[in-house]
Image (tube, rainbow, N blue to C red; front, side, top):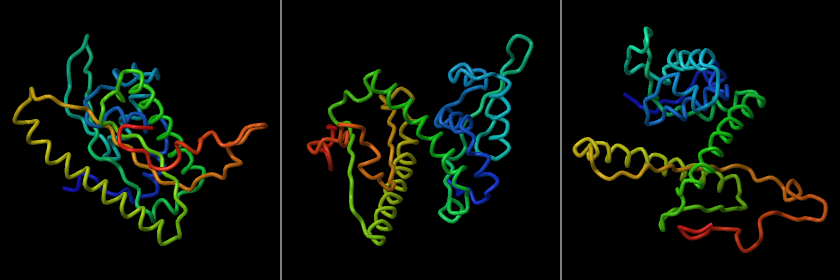
Length: 215
């Protein structure tokens, strides 16, 4: 069974645009948690959180994996089933306001993860990677860029599948919880960053590709 199917139904794509659902999916990626735990971590009302978890389950994006009796009630535990991917032709049909909601939710979640990782030493290994690359591309070059990023994503899926049996064979093996972020987007003009008396916030010396382990 394909663990990473495209979301081809625009209705599902629109439903997934809810920012809380994006945060819930992020918390349940490679993890099991209950709505109670999710609500506590996100600081959201339990009833609202439970509703959106059930909606995600109904869409097939998360699944119920366990139950536990807790003070006269039953606590349900869920995990993410798939990493949703919006096919290009579906993304093209989504209204701009919904696209902004999807991207805004993803960026907000990513920002929290990055700052939390930085505060807790997640960037202190000598072989971490953090780069920013700006390119001027023809339409053909842009298509090549997106194809190569997709190839990297496929490679990451293959690596995850290769590691799974090793971790199952040795539950006590040393593990490194890694997060990989890829993004390709049209750059805003320099004027979008400028304020009175200031230019681009990106000095020339840090533009372009930085070696692994540097910013």
